[in-house]
Length: 161
Image (tube, rainbow, N blue to C red; front, side, top):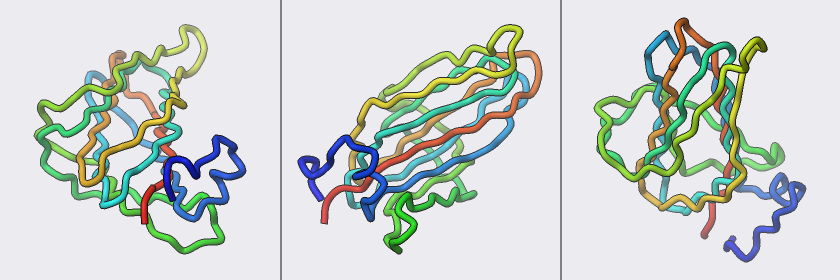
């Protein structure tokens, strides 16, 4: 599948045999940071959606390309969007990478707490084509004064043969 084959239509994206989704619930302690590592495989990954929701505290969400990182050990299992196929992703995802430094900043956004309301969130539907065989690290830093629950979601299609 090439970039030219991808229609922006949600139906087409959901029918693609190489479309994937991951959703991860986690908590971040006061003044702490949670990290997620994405290691792309041999195919380009066309990222068409990500979102982060924080339940009670303001947070900062960042994403880095090609940082120096010690690989995580706790895998996150993505799901196929098209449940009628058995195609596996070439991406590897971890929830606990360490020793992160450097890299190119791709995203750096604030997630407001919502004031008197519960929760705040951010999402991006900018289409990113991630490089093959590359490390990416996303972080969620809790800027608040107590632990907060969060949910991170990401959806992508893998391109190529």
